[in-house]
Length: 548
Image 1 (cartoon, helix red, strand yellow):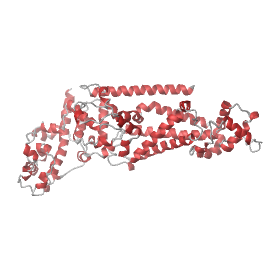
Image 2 (cartoon, rainbow, N blue to C red; image 1 turned 120 degrees about the horizontal axis):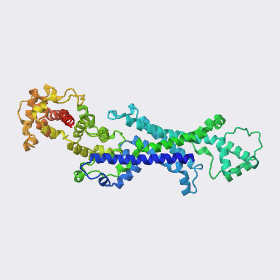
Image 3 (cartoon, one colour; image 1 turned 45 degrees about the horizontal axis):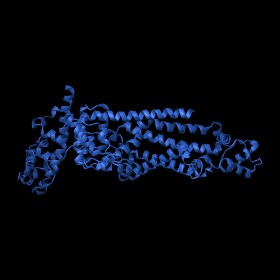
Image 4 (tube, rainbow, N blue to C red; image 1 turned 90 degrees about the vertical axis):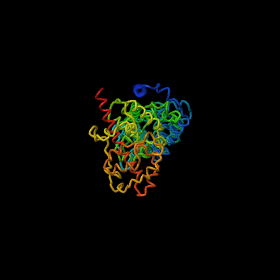
């Protein structure tokens, strides 16, 4: 009865937790999508193939990292088997009359599944050690996420270890044997219980208080009793290739373990850990078991559907993010992070920022400005979405985040530059200096030797397709940008339309008779100008917030 009461309480908290998480996600989605249709109308554009392939076989994780795929596959496959065949053995045996957890091959399969889950958890823990993480993975992460992830892994590992110890202690437990005899056979000393005990000591590794070596044992009768009362449910335990060696190792302490009913202690420990995992599932990293299948059902955004989905921030899919860092490992604009020092350039940190914004509210001027500047650097190449093991449509997220921040009065850097006068652009005293923490102290634009040989021949400008088409009333040609650098007006050069309109075709650089790296300099100026544009937006957003 106690078991059912505890289970009922845990199932109540599990259900309440799931309802809370779903309502919380829906509420935050509505907060983001004030001018959009409800999120539920848009997320059910289903991708059935992606759901099955990524949920059951985790093909995206396999492409991203074979070792991580192996760890996940071992844990999920083993855990599903243990849940269905072991934890729900009463239900399973009701459907299949030939199933009993104590007979072959189920003892072996149970140990094999437990071993798989244990090895997967160990691989997870090893992956968290600094020496096994890439440079991009070492970029700041929330301590709370790391703690929840590690705690979930340790709980699962504790569940598996306690299960092995429980089975091992039961193999040698005399009180447990007596309980089974009383429940299933009704034997006593007069009807052959001693014979059966001796048989189990010899064949099942049972440990008894009383030494039966001096007793007269009828092993033929014992074998007959075992076949009549025990064999349908209990084979020899040797196929339990992990639990049996543990039991043999504990035999010298068998009487002491029986005296204190350590088998019951391990049972309660195993049971309570399992209940804790269930109760905390909605609030732990294990919620990914629900979120990842949902994210995998979403069809990837296409150009024709981009506009109508522009403002949709699917926060339910974002909960599927495991912070694995694969997206940042393949990010094409990681070098921009090295220049600007803005961590919001990296995809896995942008995801965390969006979730934090949904949780704490949007009017954090510094967060919005940093996220916008980081998102502006994104080329929308799709490599992050292609590799995401959770199946999150990251391109949809980046576009939706841009749309959202524009509505908040935080335009992209290109729009910011075009709308900012040279006078405002050069007044750096108007905004904070610590928007980014660049590790690049100097570059080509700071080295006089890189541009001093420019003779203003205009070959670069005459070969420039941007100048030829006069895109959006382009202001300067490449040779004029070089001249600004020669005059020491680097900051003014970063605000030039030419710097922001450059197509990086490298025609100017290839044709320059002086060998000046014109395109490389323009790209560097644009990257450094991103920081200035972000600082101006931060100042404007801060002023808007104070006005409110």
